[in-house]
Image (tube, rainbow, N blue to C red):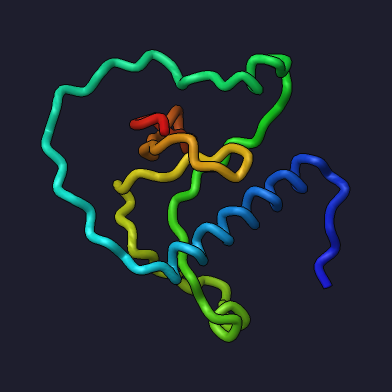
Length: 128
């Protein structure tokens, strides 16, 4: 049995990951409908993300967890138990594909991975 942590940050992350797992399983079991082709248009300038009424009541110093989800893959329990040190797990995404930016278990933006002074970062491409 997995022991739940008393750390509120880890609990929030675990909760967010459980939500992402549920969404992934729902997506994996749904029928894929091809997207309609998009017509290129002039992008509108957006200076910041829209602010919800709930967010306005929070203190600006309240910490939140921002998660960048690079890829997901459904595997069997057998495959999970057979993972070995140094083994490569392949995903169906390119390293240059957009990543999901998740807050509170909800995808809030799409972003690209960037390097910032030798560390990993993200550049927001689209606020959802």
